[in-house]
Image (cartoon, rainbow, N blue to C red; front, side, top):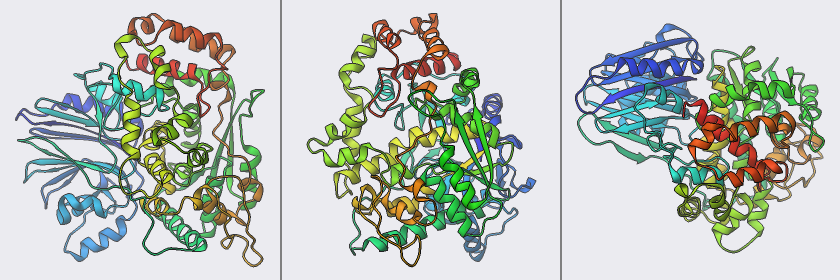
Length: 608
């Protein structure tokens, strides 16, 4: 929805308007509709607005509540803001706007630090309580909206992106060896609070930070995901019914919380197709949908139009097909990488960037199927992990890690050698309590950590680069909580009744592994050919099967003077990948040469 920034002094010095202004300028793409800066002694807030709810000036930010002496900067959308507003009015609160931003401030006035428990949505916000002289920072439960910060003696700066913090200056950009290890073994995921730079941190999902102006900041969790079975057992059809109801509620919330039209990113897969079907059932008409395709490679098609067209035909959506030639992919790669808050390895980052550019010319908000695979076990590696026994860490790493620790040590120079940091992190997540089975622990880790710093971050960065807000109903926290407590068989593979599909005469159907509860809901709503197809991805084949101009491009980056001077990668490892780029793929089918090239390109684009 927006971009936020701030400079909070803890040493009595005045906040820097110049620093806030520089961060605001770097966030302009996230909020092209309005901007604002608030300075009050040691506290400075900045805001760039993408107007979605209450388009009037009354929802201008930073939002100042003179009645309670509060100031707010907020990025995101509170989907239950109307219900909360009704409750707060009944408690005697008076509103001056019609938006969700003021609802956060009144919630703070009513419930204080527990206000986050009442918010349903995606959010990153900071409240300044002028009476009590402290700030309060919060991030939504699943980390859909980003919040980065730099903490130095006497000061905390925050922003919606890491590059915005760099723009303000005075940041320690030394590469963190722990973060680097995660970056190249965990598919580009650097879990919060780490980032690739030692001097920049990000607020954990489901956390808040209390920042007294005359004291020490305090980090606290406010939400954790429980992956245990409910006490009362349920039949399969009951689970289907509950997921159906919860997904419908999530979709309805995300459609109603908007004063502008909302479209759908239609990939051609089950998840986005099901969203279109349910929206049609809810009475949405003339729905705008968007699909993107790239040039084929001999090994892989570059689009899924065959499947997305079937959804379009059934529901007669107002559809746009977007075709991107390889020449445009390589031409636009550098600017897409520059929009990354952190280096991203997934090949579809450039795809989302180019898709968002086109979509933003038609709508300001889109629904996306992001998160369904992680929450409902849609990827091929989940059944493998589930069926293979042994050590929990090994069960995960052998199917997911991009590089084992031994290979990592051959990739980086000795200065970056160290312990197997990623193994430590994964073991910690897998050993957390409140999970009944091994696969429950894996899916919980995916939803609360891996998903956050890979696909969720990617979608936010690449859509907001064009002032386009992406909403992810499959990551509604109530739906995620429900899914986490389901028996694994309901997700991994179990024959399910199609009771929500074709009505009378519905039959039990077994499709491909994964997401079986969603397939049961989809049966009869979208074509069987879409439901039962092999698992699809967001293909950009030229970044997986690297050859020709793309190989030359990556070679030039990795053999550049800047890369040599940085001294992170062993030249022998680079040579090995360049000599045979198409044979060095990760376990989840990423190209290892692309990983190194995009990391180095990102570092250079950040002025490093």
